[in-house]
Length: 97
Image (cartoon, rainbow, N blue to C red):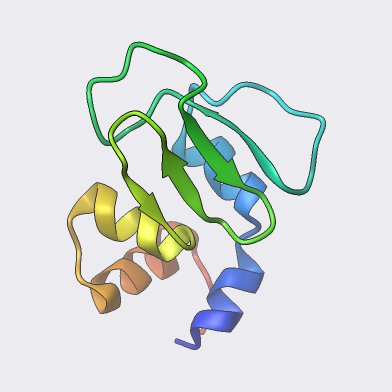
């Protein structure tokens, strides 16, 4: 699977709305927005986890978790290798290869 095709098929806004059920609603469609509670630590403070709706990047200012795209998010969250994260995204999002 071509990673550019994968990332262009799954818009970051749609991805994070599904994968982060506590993500606050946003009217923005670009740039950095509040992602809700960080899924990488026992977070109790909203606002420290941010996601980028252009690139899919993520960053937690509390625990330091970060990544450059949705593949990196799945790798870190599910503790998967790069190839396994791509396979998981293809399967979970039913992407035609």
